[in-house]
Image (cartoon, rainbow, N blue to C red; front, side):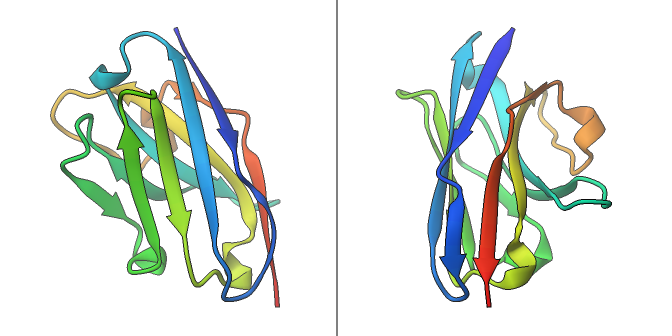
Length: 125
């Protein structure tokens, strides 16, 4: 069992920055690939970013490339999402997710077994 808890969401003006955190507890954190997803009302949950267990590789959806940076601190069992140059269209509930890493990764929410409760990010224009 892995428990995930996001924090760091809030209200920010367009062009501003936020850093989301996701603290994990339970099983060995280093065994897990971690993802960030986001969801707005009436829409499906969408992939934002992924990081491999040792942080050597990261992947992003096109709309956030160059603005968002995902990282992890395995000593603290925490992953981060640094979000810069925020846009109103980034407004969503952001979720972190975890799944055992077997050498490949997925953009599909259905491939992730563990989820946090989400944190709201609102970007005003």
